[in-house]
Length: 333
Ligand code: ASP
Figure 1 (cartoon, rainbow, N blue to C red):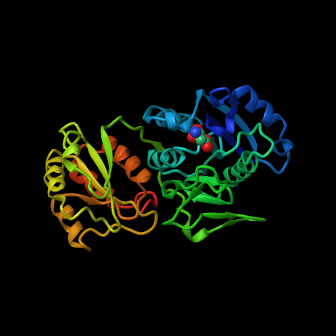
Figure 2 (cartoon, rainbow, N blue to C red):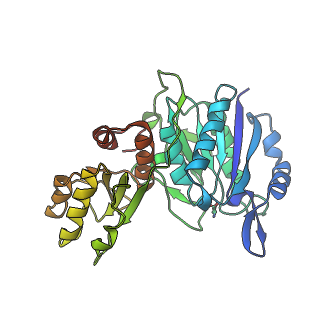
Figure 3 (cartoon, protein in one colour):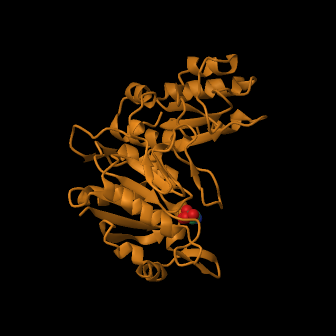
């Protein structure tokens, strides 16, 4: 019988209503789990649960929590067939992206899930999300970090939080679902990453100073010059469309040029949920290429941020980081 480790980090699924709003409540969460007979059904994998302390609203997740999660999986890697991580939806796509890079040669399912309504409430979507995630984690069918939510299994580093209040909280606009969750769990075999040839390894992350800039009409780039200091190791620029910045961006280019000269990795992503950056397709983007920016292609901002943390923690050489930013490592582009 497959054995799955549930790692509970908090999020709405573990929360209860208080005078200040929803807050994690381990007692209520445990009581709600005890009321789920499905979890004791013989068709379920065997499971055990650890809770990180304290349980968090995922808005409070940092690189430290990602490293802790990575260590828990690494310490238990051989003892379990799969992992379910209960996590708040707000930053689930960031954590899934980060773990996808941190887990090198992953050969087991790591499934992140949560809910929009706490498990202790009668209309909670957490019940189905947890049951399906446990079945997928115990199936041994995927070798990657995924988000299982609503009716889909998504590649974690392709997912974005799409709805603040709907039960279909995540979408993966540039990559079809890895599985559709209907009457059956229908896997899209052609998309799944192959089993690794090398042994599993955890790469922990350093707290590298990185930033994200979203361009908008009328943006005064001079204001950002102050953050493009020598301390900055990487920046993701969320541009318009296929990688375009405002035409009068003369103020931006010297800033980017200076940042790349200082060794910062300037990665160009798009504000569009769907489609890809093509530096040089328009006059308004070719200058970015000239001053040393790299293309984030169709990576989500979440994946680009996580990949920057990962590559900057692993490689000292800016040229290597730039090259690998434009290379798909875990199906993220
Ligand atoms: N604020 C919550 C969190 O991210 C939202 C959720 O879980 O749905 O922890």
